[in-house]
Image (tube, rainbow, N blue to C red):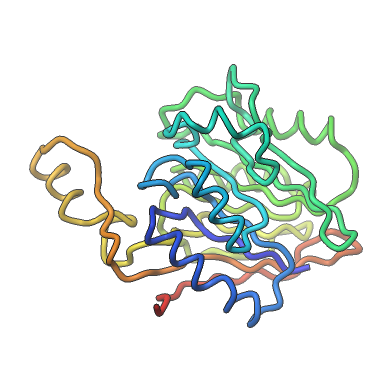
Length: 261
């Protein structure tokens, strides 16, 4: 099995990048299952239902989230029916939706789990390692298991990966919007990447129009970061090859490219 995982989709530019790049990548790499992190897909924060449906219609099979999972409160009204949407597993006092789901990919079981990490993050969550260990005890059927770990700290991500040596198939980080250069197969047949990066404006600041970010950070101006909807488009993603008999990862490679209109 070959999985394609897109990094954080930032606004309309990121969504357009998915729309244009996905058919080309599927055709080139013969991809079996597509995952995208959609926590920034609606105007840079959160995920509206119409944008959830847009990404699914474009060919994304599963969407994960992160610390901006509830930035659009509308999510409460549709998440229970959105069976291809995975919110962070370790949220406290939130029972809508699911933090892990099992998919059938041509007869092969694939579980996708979303975990929100703690270092330098503002959200109060259940301890991430404990949360995933609890899930593995409750859902112990053999399967391919892909885990999106959403967090700021690369050291926390690496610790998390080593803690689950041989217990899951792939652990890939999101959140920083900057792709790291450490894609590798760890002992036990486990694919790892500290951060897959983002899909959006390559000339902005982590996907946002750079002047709005600079004015706020350097000039102290108030207001939200803006997205230049006419910007160039970039995708950051990774491809993971998995043995369907052993459920172990055999190869991981990164994708970093400008998307032509």
